[in-house]
Image 1: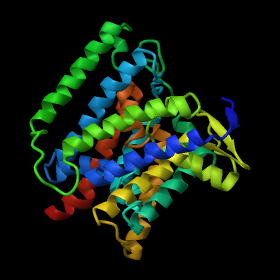
Image 2 (image 1 turned 30 degrees about the horizontal axis):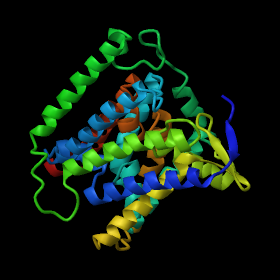
Image 3 (image 1 turned 60 degrees about the horizontal axis):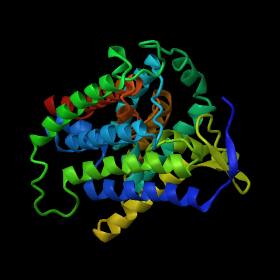
Length: 358
């Protein structure tokens, strides 16, 4: 696919990208939502609270984004199913999250809290994503992405299409999925807010879902005509190439010229996320510089590199696939998310549970 370079960058292009990132970073910090913790706590602490917040965000996005798509306000583009890349990439990303001490969005927003460990993990994420597109990791990436599977005659099949490609079938499947999510969420008293410093888990989940819908709309209207939504892995790679090559090298998403460099809308989204977290952390008086031991900094850096490679390979991170991709009900995205959770649980077992049992 040829690169699509639009006209010169506009203020709307920059500000809307930053705004969406700032909003997400603010809510993630205020709600302490990290998918690594959400997945990890299920088997390590038998705690489902953050996972419920994640599912609530997903449910809101499934209904809201598909409704806007069907009435023509946005155009959702489900990802194709690359079985090897989605499953292996997703599984390795889940492992990388545990090693890095946070997911793609988690390490990004924690930069805004002053965590140098998160900076180290993000730098690894930044490097791994960049080197996977056209660097030394690209042969493995391309090999895993060489296998594409069609279901119901489509490479980018969605969950309802094996049962019929009609609007009735689509919304019947959406209803089953969202009712299941709702029933699971209601077990944890989502309306019992109480008093606490940050956002209650249900408020956090609902707001992340609404921001996800808004980001679809904003990216389509101001980001070059593509409803890209929330994501971190590919934009981080694009930022890598903008910095080191003056060209974001996006083969799928619109780029614009900004002086001597080309950029994408989502690069500003990534930049805005730690800014939003910083604003929240400052208000809550939770900002402080936190310096990890050297060994820990190197470990989380390695985890970040693994997340960068596997996120690009698997088609996205915990946000890009886990929310933005899965809300389209893409079979490829759903496969990547399931593999991500299993990878997380595998590493949690070997890093935390097994040593405690010995």
